[in-house]
Length: 607
Image (tube, rainbow, N blue to C red):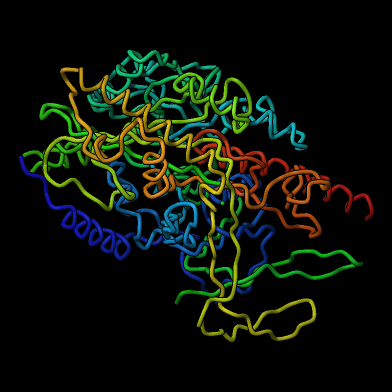
């Protein structure tokens, strides 16, 4: 059995992306800056960045047909093959749809410069991530409220999680527009859900889609190890093991936030007419324009150039499976790849509809490493960062293929492999994101219109990312224990006749489980980000010196300026961050509308 060369797949899809950029029909209201026309327009709201939250916010604000919204996006459309086809999302890393950020050398992680993939396209990172729909434990949001942010408890935010969601209920008939596809192979035991936590009418499609047999084997191994089967990761509890719910449409296309919310003119999530949304592609933001009125600073615009983060670390263990183990490599075999592409393109089924990270567990340290917890507490070095007893410390994701270094290191042959990846959900270490003049960078001569009307020369800036990974050594020790846990699961899977498996990377001889120093060294030199940087503009009370915005997301000290994305999270959730980012945008839209109404009423009463 032979698989096509990874480089051939990558180059072929890159070529298809270029064709898509050239042949996609123009969409009304979306395109590069047209100075003659656009400079004559006035907008009620300017959104800097058409990312996940930006798309939601624009659509919700424009539910008022009198409103005009300007979205300035540095990237371009996400209507390209590597974004639309779920199984190939890793090919967006280091592509034009990736900002291609890297960290500074990480002193506590082998002095490595590490990738920080972020989406540079309409839809932001929802156009390139693993499409995992996971909200996180309820207690995490209660903790947000307890940190001085009224209105952000789980009870407060649950309606906003549900508002955006269009859950494709597998229990609905196939004739229903939110029901399952008739030809998709169902796995009912793993497709349970609690209806009271879900909504079938929102614009963001959420579904159970493909499930590899090896992903089922991972779930069975966890249950055998004593990890309970979770009915619904987004229900009463997030602890346990099961498959993920995903934001993939019924037609097997990624439901990015651009695809879900920024629909053609005149269409609004929920129905009705909408105001004007103008999306400018290739708009690189230079600065927010500020003026002072009556002693108060106020934002009134943005300057841009036209083209014409704590974080979750992950550590992987790779296993060689039996030849009959059902993994993605089978779909990539020369004898099957064309059938797989046909099944995807015509029938909307098969391996290419998978977002690869199909199943996972969410566990607490005392459940898989009680001796470690007891030892750390006895030494006085244990650090409890979870928000409560229902909040997990570690997540282990199962990937039915060979995964190393964001998919850039491929399997050495066409055999069957699977990978377990442990994510540190409550890191103690945190770092910084700053901007500074680009070294040896040229200065541009853009003219900025400011309150004083003067001309300014702006230095070309760059983003400096320093997550400061493993600066708290407890993080490395937790991840070392996670490697031991993944090996336990691996031994369980090796006993499964449909799975089998022996560890090939890093290898127990090279990194023994009874050598904590070797395990920590492996963790520090191998762990990678798993795409969840947050909290650089955290929300909190004015008394908190680290807070940038208040509980209504207003920037302290500047009127008419808000931050609305994952950066406002006061603490990183113990889960995936796309869904919480959407929730933040949904809630922010309602707060802005409320403030707008109150402002308009005040002005009217004065007149």
